[in-house]
Length: 185
Image (cartoon, rainbow, N blue to C red; front, side):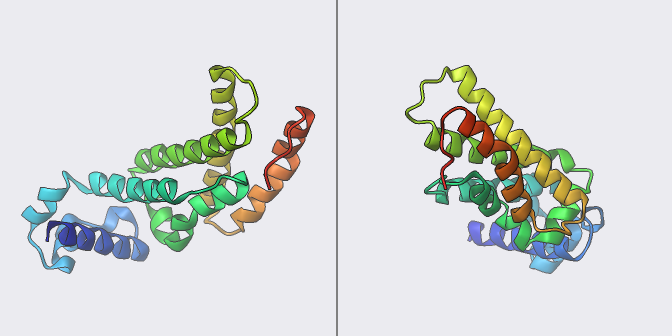
């Protein structure tokens, strides 16, 4: 029953977030829409930022758990963004809210997970120090984070998958070939 209530609170919050900015959503409105009392909300969440953090963290965790193969960084990043594409307005509203730091933190966590999965899949047999491996992972995460941030700032008006394809085609693949590595396709 408790999980049912939590899921209902999250679903209601996402639906409201698709309709209007985060700053216009209140706990009072969420509980009214769910048909529960305020204590039920506060039993599960300390406040709205805690709800935002859980929703984003769950989606990132779901992607990382379900990701079986990191055969292509661009495909992995595009798949990781599926939640943002499915909930465009909600993502945009959180990104442009006072809780952007929560969004940024979880977006970077997502970018690092994808980057680590890809780099570790690609470079399994390449002798690298831990520092070099981490530097490559961080570089890829920063590229992905920057691309997603630019996409969000443009109101998600262009195809981010195509943007990733071009970034990797122009930058990552030549660097890998220079090192004698073939990018995974």
